[in-house]
Length: 169
Image (tube, rainbow, N blue to C red; front, side, top):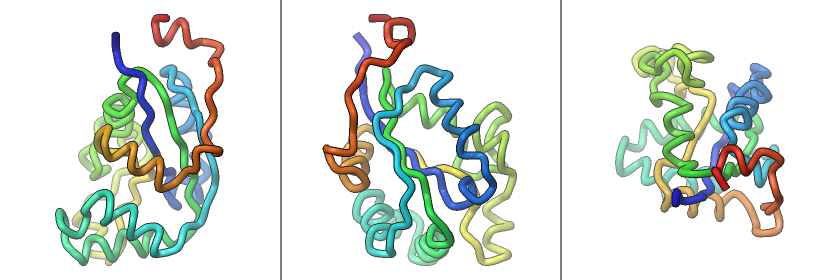
């Protein structure tokens, strides 16, 4: 039987400010993922440092400059943090959001449909990449990120009306 798992997504400040958060969340609901946690927050730099470096090792992977512009970009407004649950939720969500660089994201993915900026353009203007959404990279990262963004009391276990159809149970 397939693994029911949870994953974290963050609807970034550009998604919130453009007013496309509802459309994005609808895509996850339509595919059969269940929202088990949702909140709007404006984290401080320490919270983002823990998210992007302590958990994701961004400085290690992409360098201090990439980390700094990402941090500045994330600080421009609130984000919506969501925990989604479903069969193989982590790879499913990664497939649905598309490539990190919107220019390379395929049509039909969230980034492919709602963004188009290249890394080169973002670098030229000294900005983080407005790519709308963060999603956990793998199951281990998902568990760490969920614990970082949500308390146990903020996560809910309930029966989704369509569970038997989308989970095959």
